[in-house]
Length: 154
Image (cartoon, rainbow, N blue to C red; front, side):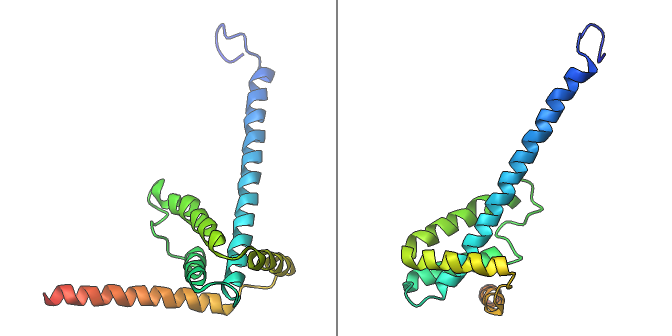
């Protein structure tokens, strides 16, 4: 018995706990599946970015989204409670959706197929993606340094 007069047996208290555990497993499985789909979409964006049929503005935006997705640095650092994960949960999927809207559907369909095949075969992401991320962060760092120098001279 759990308490005086509660009338609740040990077996009835276990049912809700098992139900919560099953619910948590289902939620975790859905999140993992969504994360896997997002990873595949980002890789497909990377492939679509490289396709010459993709308009320049879609390439530029897709490059930023892919660079942000693969970058170890976040807009808002993860250790900041709640806000740290909002960029990963909101900004990245939103950026992917916007990029998908800019890229021709035929290009995206072909890129999704390639991404699925390449990810299944275990082929790693190209080093060009790493270079792109590094280049964007180095450019951002140089811009911040330039602004800091101008402010310091004023």
